[in-house]
Length: 385
Image (cartoon, rainbow, N blue to C red; front, side, top):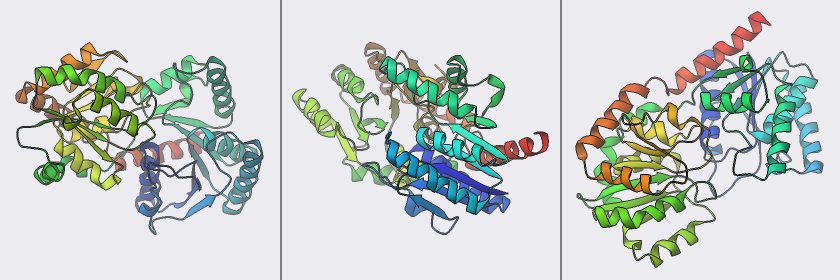
């Protein structure tokens, strides 16, 4: 098949890593002629463009930008149309909000045989201005009418979009986002070296969070819970992996609390280092308020680490409460304190939850399984429609 994937930015992120692996697998495992089209914008998260190498071609369109910009959006539409007409794809597969709308519109208008869109996370969410939320819902309905199939990375995403009237349930297929699972299954060999690198002692119990230091990522709730956690379990250390506009604010907050010596801010790390930093952790926390299905949750469990997560979007499909970790009400502080303390006080419980997660999800999140299911979806629609 001749397949084009379109995504707005190839920054370091779950949707982007998913797309990169999918393109590489389609080219190597199925012999498909693959083209990835991306915008030129980057961000403090870093870029994955260097990871592509010569596995498949990439086309960068300077006017494909994340923010709404009528002039640039029109230019991006024209650039996309020209590019697709030249490539003549059998399949156009879009990702993210902006690329999803423009890519589907162009592909539909030039009658590409199969147009597919993956929902990594809905652009509308509860903590949003009502007008903005309704506008994004309208845009998603518009886009859904201009594709043949939609993939959700979690059942929760399907439920959200169906309940919002974006598209009927039969248009959706859940295919979990894939990753290189072996890197996490074998990550424990990095533990001693990584802990030494960050000045972590053998008796420290590391509570880690991997996310941009940004709004809605929930670092403030972990910081709010940290004093009581440290009062009860002084051996705890917190590791915040990532960068963002709230970095300095969070550093000031823990300094004012007098616990800055118990926090490690790693800054931005390249994707290949994520297995090693997870290996250094004992508990992985996810306190975001909005996420399709955070990759850090299966990554932690594949690494044999228990997880504590707010019950948002697809988290409940990975965090089995009382079996692989704890699911908590969003924004809650006391349950967050109690859950982390319970795990920090019991090495046996941490091991039990981590092993349960490894057994459940090793196959489910393998990127090769993801790509095989996506390729099967392409074939099904070609045969039946």
